[in-house]
Length: 131
Image 1 (cartoon, one colour):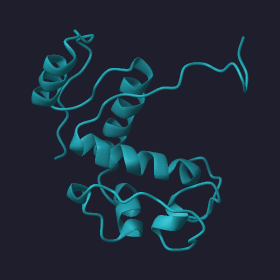
Image 2 (image 1 turned 90 degrees about the vertical axis):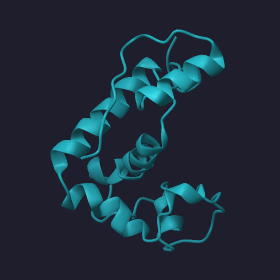
Image 3 (image 1 turned 135 degrees about the vertical axis):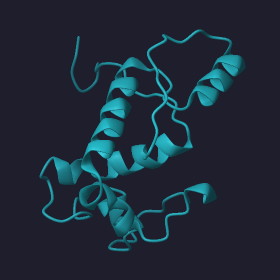
Image 4 (image 1 turned 45 degrees about the vertical axis):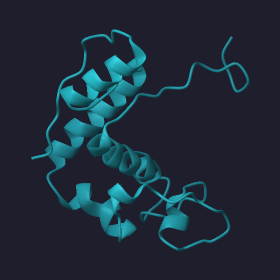
């Protein structure tokens, strides 16, 4: 069975800090990429409305300090104005690893996760760098 009540398993994966930074941006830009909004931060069901101070209806948890995003709009616009190929590669990896449930990050991160959970993950990961 599949549908609203009996849907597929949700997709997720563990991300190291660099990929978490990109993963948040990936999710926040989904409505814009899907052309559900003409400008970033207009979609009513997105947390970016609060992060951009366009709405204060809902409380959002603070982001970890290491993310240090002082200007949310600039943060969201980075991939649009930056090297699209690097961002595209990173977002493709986030998409693929999320579907597979495989941790995504540097080899040291993957090894740390393996040591903590004692599981052998599919050797599908690779270290990605943000050049």
